[in-house]
Image (cartoon, rainbow, N blue to C red; front, side, top):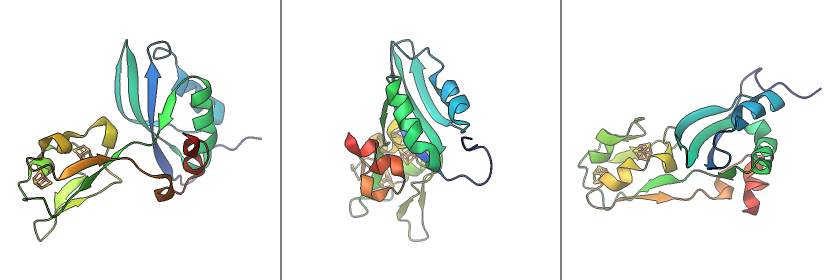
Length: 159
Ligand code: SF4
Ligand code: SF4
């Protein structure tokens, strides 16, 4: 019997999914939720008739097979980019803190910017990157060795 990923504590991992114009109207995510008995949470979605870009969370244990099934259906899967703050350049202006929609950037007690990568929606946002007047924030690719789940080491690692 296949495992039911709706039960128990789940560690979730984030994936960036790109849907082309040809497949954007297909119920691919719903089908995979049913097929793998696994929750797939949509964190952000930019979708129109030309295609879609979706930041999704999937259970770590099921990530490998979900990535493979998405790719089989024509979805492009990658790791979302995160941001990196150069503390040397930062002038503590607060623009990024004020703009972040998920409170992933804050000031610490020394007025230095601290970044919470668990909250950041990365590639689908980048508001702070554009807002920084001194270009202290950049968008960076996550590398596979920073991730522990099998999809990153396996299917995603072959990109
Ligand atoms: S990319 Fe967006 S979500 Fe992430 S820290 Fe910057 S403003 Fe916040
Ligand atoms: S927008 Fe740039 S300079 Fe301003 S607080 Fe954020 S990182 Fe620092």
